[in-house]
Length: 229
Image 1 (cartoon, one colour):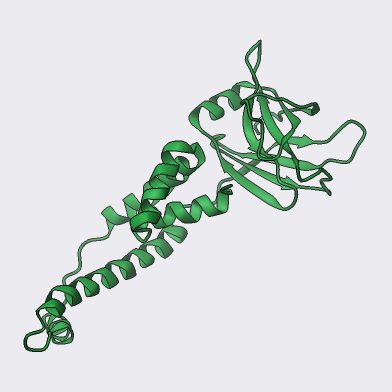
Image 2 (cartoon, rainbow, N blue to C red; image 1 turned 45 degrees about the vertical axis):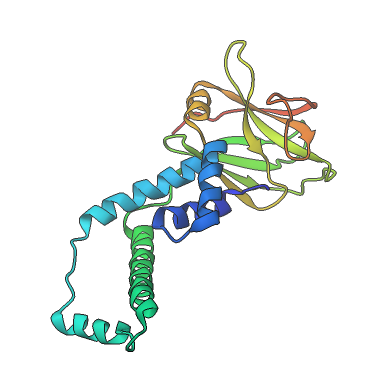
């Protein structure tokens, strides 16, 4: 399954909040071990929410509030199973409500949209630009915007590569979108290589990307990386 940046961000938010549970939580944890973008999204959300959690002091409900809660969860005589289950249900509901509140607050107080800087305009020779690539100020994320129609058979894809200086092999920055915009978080290795490089390239690959980790099809675009402002 292909996970785009938006899907990974949503899954990472639910994982960090604790609302992603059971098999889904285990699947995402495994995905974080296998996919650097998933691990980066998870780390971003954990970094966002931790300061918020530490900053909010515990609030003790009033005695009247506790009495109302006790009345609502009090089981009928002999309903021992309900005595065990209903308080757990209430605790889970309260925890979920607090986590949703934390998510809303975090979106507006802890995390700000990165400041994007121009990185490269991708166009074939004598053709109109197909993509505009930007990066965050710290080069930990890239943002790709499609500028024109991308015509390519479904059996093929365009892949973006860092061209490190010297004789080092190209390093993939992932597939380019056929339409719309795409955000992607970079691994520490990708980030350091991007900061050191002055060119990127685009190759034609099988659907899903290069099977070897290196360009296997024709390189159709080579573009200079803009200097950071």
